[in-house]
Amino acid sequence: MFTPRSIKHCRACGGEVRYQTPPDDNRDRATCSACGTIHYENPLNVVGTLPFWEDRVLLCRRNIEPRRGLWTLPAGFMELGESTAEGALRETVEEAGAHVEMLGLFTLLNVTRVGQVHLFYRARLLDTDLAPGPETIEAQLFGEDEIPWDEIAFRTTRKTLELFFADRRSGSFGFHAADIT
Ligand SMILES: [Zn+2]
Image: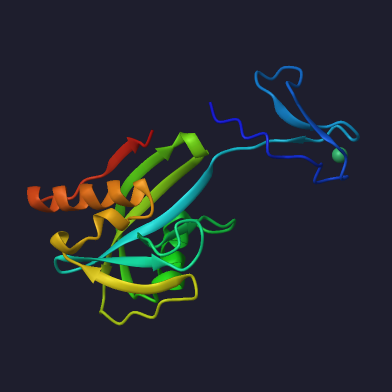
């Protein structure tokens, strides 16, 4: 089970937090020893796209930690007030400056070890004009035999790319759910 125990101080009053199981609950929660506020911690959603142009896919070389200098699909933490598809599109514009048509949800990947769920949409590039933002060193299109497999930043990126090329060979794109352990 993922138990980060990362909260030290109460977000309501600044008091000291202790991890203890509240009455009628079944796991330890960050509980303020001063005001009693319980700070619930739940998995975060990471949303992104797999942009493609004919037989090539778009990857971004990260200009930020973690994994600076390695390649990833455009993705980031979902913000409050947006849908998963809206967040995925926003990240694609911010990180690559790409113009895309959003297609269907392609992968849902549970990364239980770090308390995250990663969602990737297929997205058709409308042109090849890219304008990477400050979080990206460069954005580039790769054919399957050009993918820098040894320099991929995240396992969810690798998994999504592998499934994309496998589906393309089979002639139809499905939806894939998997657990990244
Ligand atoms: Zn408090």
